[in-house]
Image 1 (cartoon, helix red, strand yellow):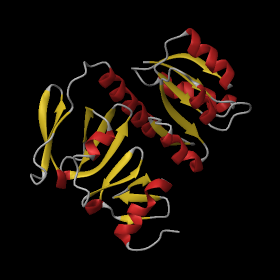
Image 2 (cartoon, one colour; image 1 turned 90 degrees about the vertical axis):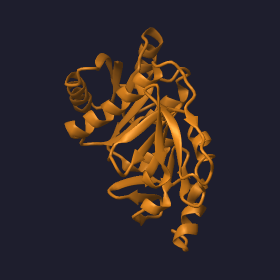
Image 3 (tube, helix red, strand yellow; image 1 turned 180 degrees about the vertical axis):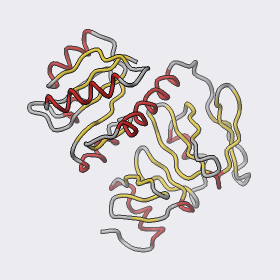
Image 4 (cartoon, one colour; image 1 turned 180 degrees about the horizontal axis):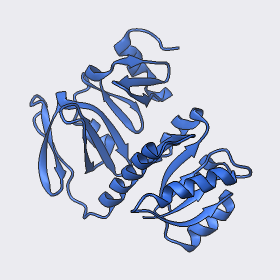
Length: 240
């Protein structure tokens, strides 16, 4: 995948470029210290992935994402945790908080590669509904129909035109082409809760709740204001 790195701090940009050089499936096309320079690179090259800082002079990282007409994938790399919710609202692939370990960086890159590979596959019907009381449904994965049991789902992540279904039994995830909205319509509302534009969780697997997030084991997922009432309903109290 062709990528660019954007950060106004020279040392941070150098470290980001060094991390990218360690990922075999990434090709760094340019390192930019401001969003305007990066915009020119996007106009001149077909870029698949952008590593982007948020706090930059002139045009911030979030403003930059909103200004790009033909959007590549974005991974935010920032020193500020407070912008995570806004980042996910803009469908970023991942949100990394500095300092970023190489292991965490690789995890984000693998996630981007997975999404990139799925975009390259031919489009097929994604889900096959089963009777509402069956307790399962089928999704297309690698040209096969895979059975997914409701009770095995811990949480679901929307990735633009794809969804990622996280399973308790395997600790892994199923990725298939469909919208999170269309899947939500097939899920029983007494088990699954929409907490964010990009996330659905199983109420049975929620382990803790905070004001603006829920936990599925060690995984913390953001809760947006539009969906907070659903969390209040299952906890029986206002989170504030």
